[in-house]
Length: 119
Image (cartoon, rainbow, N blue to C red):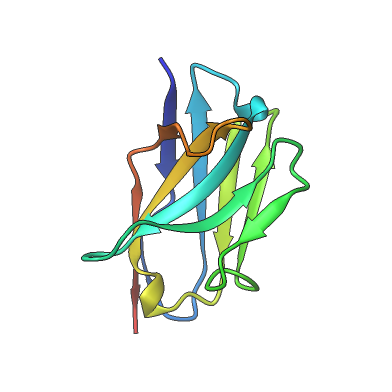
């Protein structure tokens, strides 16, 4: 069974840091483009960061650029999101997602992990 499980979400004060981790089970994520998305209450889900299969193609949203870092460890079957200088507007449920390179949309999703940033 294909599964993505996110961990690491919690409450933190503005200016703090968190590291989210996404672990794949039942399959190898090394062949997939991986990404983090987030969804805040009352808002559409939005792309945060993505990394290609080799780990060198990395992309960030404007809001994540300079504060967040996405990394992947294909040997450990994990993808992490290091978030620094967190702001209240980063409060959201964060989701890990995977897609085949040939697909236009992400096929597999985790259940999400909640991040709350208080001012």
